[in-house]
Length: 362
Ligand code: CTP
Image 1 (cartoon, rainbow, N blue to C red):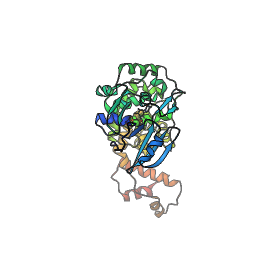
Image 2 (cartoon, helix red, strand yellow; image 1 turned 90 degrees about the horizontal axis):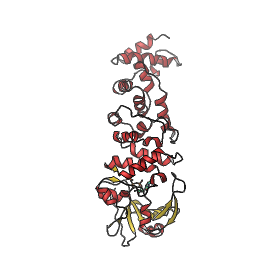
Image 3 (tube, rainbow, N blue to C red; image 1 turned 120 degrees about the horizontal axis):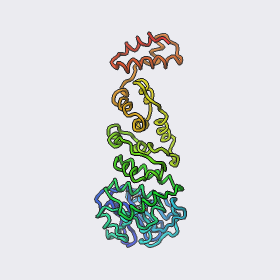
Image 4 (cartoon, helix red, strand yellow; image 1 turned 180 degrees about the vertical axis):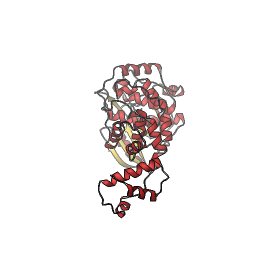
């Protein structure tokens, strides 16, 4: 997303956070955050029609020339309960105070909307140049452990590295995790990180023990390169193919569909032949199939996705009725009988299938 032009001559309106970082890096931004030093709801409503406002956080969404732009008031926060959403203690604090509550120096940059001047209270520009992620204070990961996953995301997305002291703080935290944290936020960051489909992200996640934030017991990196696998067999929910591998997922809240994908992969047992492979995977989400492959048997998965998935029997219930077979659970047995034959010889024709159905004996 590009920087939004806003007609404002005050010295109180600033682009903030990711957008400034991305502009200095010369990459596209995912969203635009603008902060007003003071009360944004009062000041920023003049930029267009107000779409939505949240007085508790001092934020307002305004339609600026057809684009929804979020304006936030500068705010001070405290983490009353570590690992959970902070509590806003002041709306309309100084820009410095607003900026210094953030996660990393590279995300603590501001840029004046009227002059384009960069305001850098924490040395973010220097860190950006050196591609370093540095927390703003030693309690940062204790306040908000999701920042460890955010760091991983930025490491992979931009090729950043953890600054030495920040790396030690991460290690310290991972050795003393407080599991009473907001897993809703953890999940959001996991989705953003692993949807990047990066083997490197997963290797760091495992080798540095970041996965322990979710699943405490020891976990070893699977031998399969998951990034390559997903490139060959694309799926919609990429992150699930990574995170679904962790042994303990009890802390994450999954949707019904997500839970089914994981459970399906875990309940399938040994698959001994083409017919068993076909019956197990037919109609299953691709994510489940890949998970099964990584966890149990990749040869079965490759056999299915490369070959068996393309095989379909042609006869239907209507054809069986026409043969004078009354509808009953027998139909499924006939279809399976025909399927078995077709898996052995995919070239058989519709007529062959009809003949097989006629010959079927229970
Ligand atoms: N932030 C933070 N701690 C978090 C999440 C966010 O301090 N746990 C701050 C950072 O300053 C961040 C800003 O809030 O830049 C906006 O957060 P978000 O939109 O999630 O991140 P961006 O940095 O904008 O990154 P992205 O490009 O992924 O949107």
